[in-house]
Amino acid sequence: MKFKKRVVTEAGLRQFDIAPLIDCIFLLLIFFMLTSSFVVIPGINVKLPKALSSDDVGTQTLTIVISSEDILYIQGQPKTLKEVEELLQHKKYASIFIKADRDASLGAVVGIWDACKRFEIEKIGIATTGGE
Image (cartoon, rainbow, N blue to C red; front, side, top):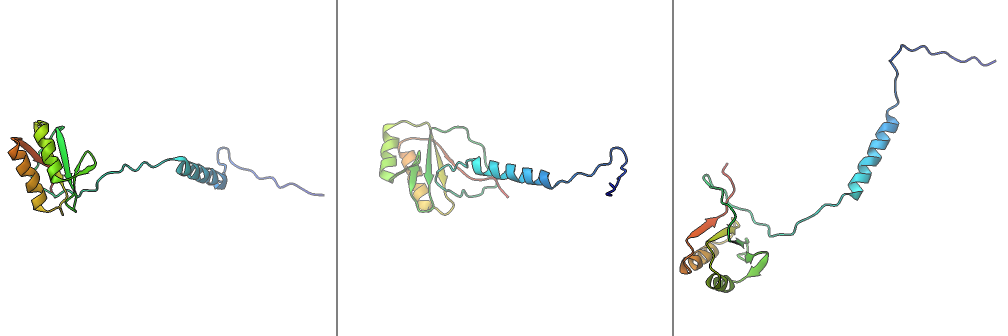
């Protein structure tokens, strides 16, 4: 004869096996990792120099990006200094915003600056990151 063992537990004190719960959470984690899509926005990688004092500038009319290899970009398209000068000459911009990489040569920035002054663009901003 086989006798059953009686286990007496106090009311409300049950022990649950959490292994199935961990398995379910692990499967949900894998599911969401595999089904999520990561969007990589292509762009030009520019490391801005730091400045101790800077002002936030609103939306500018034209943004010119200068990479560390001294390549000029307008709206993601590479341009030469001559093309930028032609663009500034034919279209009247109220302001220009320059985003130059910290490793870009000063000559590239000064070339853009001179072109802006030549075509009487008075508002020229240079992008920097916050201090410290």
